[in-house]
Amino acid sequence: MKIIILNISPYKDNDAIISAFNNDGSYDFIARGILNSKNKLAMLNNPLTYAEVEISKSKKSQYESIKNANVIFSCMELMSNFNDLMWCSILADVIKKCLNQDERPLIFKPLLITLGALKANFNKEIYILSLLGLILKLSGFEMNVSECNICHNKDNITNFSLKRGGFICKNDNLDNKNLSREQLILYRDIFKGFVYYGKEKYQITNDDFKKISKDILNFIADVLDFEIKNITLLYD
Ligand SMILES: [Zn+2]
Image (cartoon, rainbow, N blue to C red; front, top):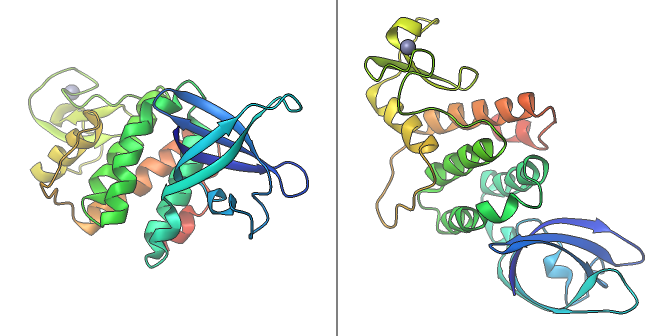
């Protein structure tokens, strides 16, 4: 079966319990010897590794165990780009803390597309933002990007606010800040649902990507009350 590994918890000796998921469900497996760097499973010891694994049932343990594994993608492939590597770590942390075992399968395909975009270094910004938008929605914070979320008017949309739940019109805009048309379209695309763009290049300025991703991560950490590891490394 093919799985994305989310978490590796040391168990005993060099064994660890691996939490993983795919489109069909979430799983906990025991991976014997994984913490020994010479073990054949050691390459699985990294969050967001996508691998094909062979599972076997054991009468001795409550967990099924991983017998063999073939890595399809590992975040170690992103070693040459520090920010991409940090994004892997942050996405793993956010998914682990925001989504329960029933919710994780719902982001499997979007996450695979995002990892593919990081690897290809193409359209990764729009996929990271859309994935964060989807995680927010599954956590109970769906953003309204089809109308003003205060008065439900569709006209004169001038701003977007995470705290106020989506688009804000001119009359309800408290801070005298207006977003550009391109920025409003970007917010709509991030929160309308996860879309696959194929070979079409999605343009986002570096400033917009930094600001919006930082705002979303801080909002998630705030409303769900946890600290996101490594977030300061990304924005300093
Ligand atoms: Zn309004």
